[in-house]
Length: 365
Image (cartoon, rainbow, N blue to C red; front, side, top):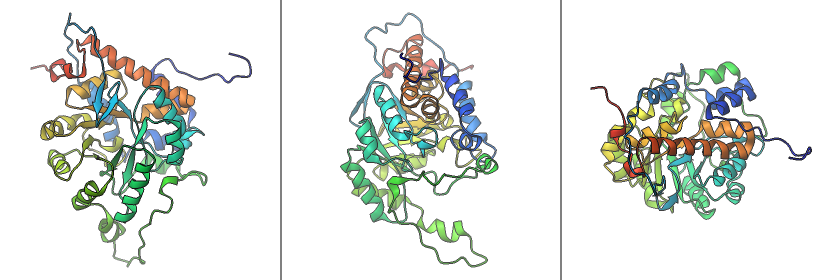
């Protein structure tokens, strides 16, 4: 490295990336990206639940010629790890979502672009074609929602991830205490021009949530309409109840993501990994079932697949890599996570993803 080249601040382990990222960020931005809702019980549960799952390896199995690859919604993927949608990434690095897309692309990792991306989707698509799923929050106008979906289809996105678990923002005490606010130069640029709900002044006894907001939040009829009219397959993110999983399939959803929004919306929910098995049983193979929430190690990926996930999404780990070292940090984090996962596969005797079954989890019966 020549003296005029900046050093890349790569960290040795996944844990080091997260601790370094927290140290680098201001307290308010750390609260936004690494905090959760209310007392953060669900945020903590997401990781604690993985710790309580214990692996039971099988010895001397033939893992020659193995692979962690699969085809997901028609897209070949060399491993079952995706980058979860995370908003306003320029808050942690000046290159924001472009650096995330470059880092993900370096590892052939599919990336879901947040609806609240701080960089235009066209620029991000130009930086990396593995950024090919677009997250959608339902807006007050069906036509505007469909126009946004069609614009993303024209840019080459291949799926829409409709987030259904956050019709309103959760109570985020840590953000309130630290005074988190978006700076004036960062905004959800891809939503420019989208209609905002227009409300007349509230009467003294009216509730902004129940008397106004509730009337424009999406329902199953809206999901059915979107699935019928979207030029892209629709994935429903935030499904946690088996009955809702069945409704998602009936509505035309192409896949489901079991998610409690990283513990950022409704506190005291169970961990995503705890909710996964019942949803997977209800779906019974009809569509792929993904999950996010609490993924910090390769063994977490293995455990999720053992309990019925087709793939997982990691958000905070990717943000930690971006914070610490930009695109190189994202790439390194994803490589470490994939390496850990494939090591765990081999040590439990799993040559392919189909070999990852509940039998590799220890149950003290």
